[in-house]
Image 1 (cartoon, helix red, strand yellow):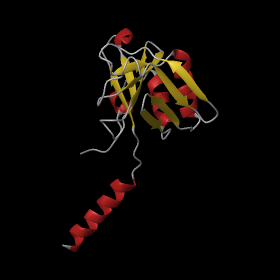
Image 2 (cartoon, one colour; image 1 turned 180 degrees about the vertical axis):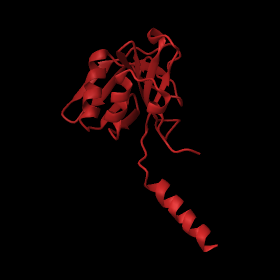
Image 3 (cartoon, rainbow, N blue to C red; image 1 turned 90 degrees about the vertical axis):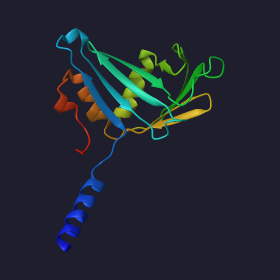
Length: 162
């Protein structure tokens, strides 16, 4: 019985000390490089009120999207976003996609957001009454994998085995 308790203690200690990250990397490999893609996602714990940030890389181009699963963006109230960086706040107009649950960030803002996260800065984005802070924890590691062109499943795997 004592041996089982020691094993259980070690298992809990080991898994509780492993670093957790909201960033996840997934890849789609089709066998034809022109159709391969990789996605880096920041998923929030609050599925109803939070926003997710996704970076897609296909053919060497990176695009960023904000999405929500708990509510739809309003064409009237959510037509602009405030993005808070360490040194400044930027206001941008948004183009809300059909279905009103997703918006694309302009390329210039995608580059600025990426640079801030790689520099270890948190980025807060506010659309209407919804605000979400995206933490830079392990972002650089994942973003380098996103843009490296490596779509190997084992390079992309993160997390613990069940």
